Length: 223
Image 1 (cartoon, one colour):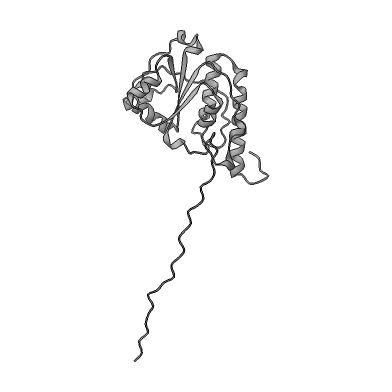
Image 2 (image 1 turned 60 degrees about the vertical axis):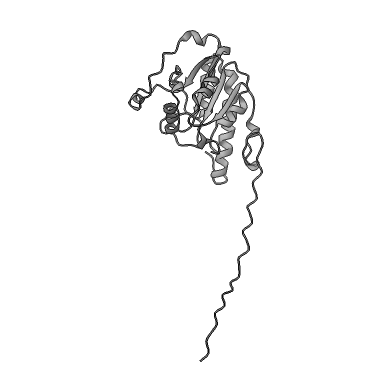
């Protein structure tokens, strides 16, 4: 009786080559093929802007905070969800701070303290103002507010009667919800009482949105 010998030798598959890392633009930090630096047109502004970005927004291709930062020379962009109180206190030192955030009475149930009233006197000198902006989805920005009591102590600047958002690449849950860039731009128009100076920033944003739409829409279609 002949027995068949089964070979235990198997052909090893060649090791998978590591995928080449895509080249990234050192300025906008996006892939070189989707660089947004063409939409950078810095706008002079007196009000300092502090952008606190949720970590999940850092690599979101639809996010506008990086473009906003690159267009505002007097701005800082930091990433985090919960900041050390001493770190946040240092960031908020030396100027009058205003949080760009709507009135949300329902947040009292979460233990979020009601904000102090905004004193109109602090708005008289834009150079002494700092606009604090939370970059994240509504749920994430609310969590950032909840986890950073120092932010709860800032007077708020709600935006009212704003134009419709140009943010066609992200779903809004309400008609008046704006991108981080749009909301900050309209706030600066209001605080510095100078609408025309910030219009180029909205124009740059429109170009950015059109670029992002071109990646997802079939050729020949228009938004």
